[in-house]
View 1 (cartoon, rainbow, N blue to C red):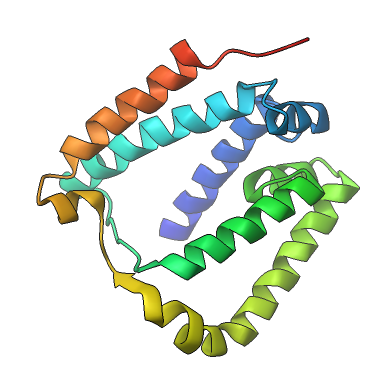
View 2: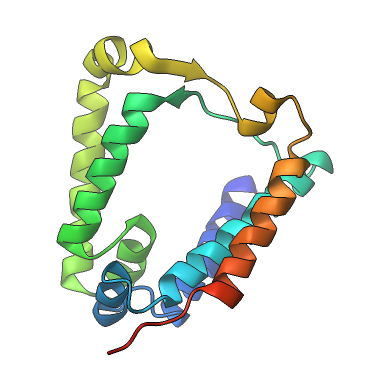
Length: 175
């Protein structure tokens, strides 16, 4: 049942991305050039709602928030790979699935490339773990745990900031 609910949530998220034009080449290019803020506004809204929502659901026993260990090099290298992949393909992981569902060939190739990349990563992970990941592994840390405060004291201002950014600060810059 949990997998089915996750699948339904994924379908709704994909539909929102599709309706928001997040798989449109023109919109993605505008976003990367910082001229079309629609996708950034969409992401800020999702982060704002999701940040507060997950902590409230966890506190109510309706979700199981599991913090993953922080690997500094993993985040840095993963971010570089993510950025290069987005710049080359024009898609991020969510939008390439939406584009593939629309039948866009470039998105289908991006999804296939992601599977190949994930397969290669799983093969080299044991080597990377000892030499690259473990030396700068910080464990399961959060800003709230490091400050010794309730996570809601971080989640509430973060949510307000993201939603404010989306609705009141970001403006499209058309020439």
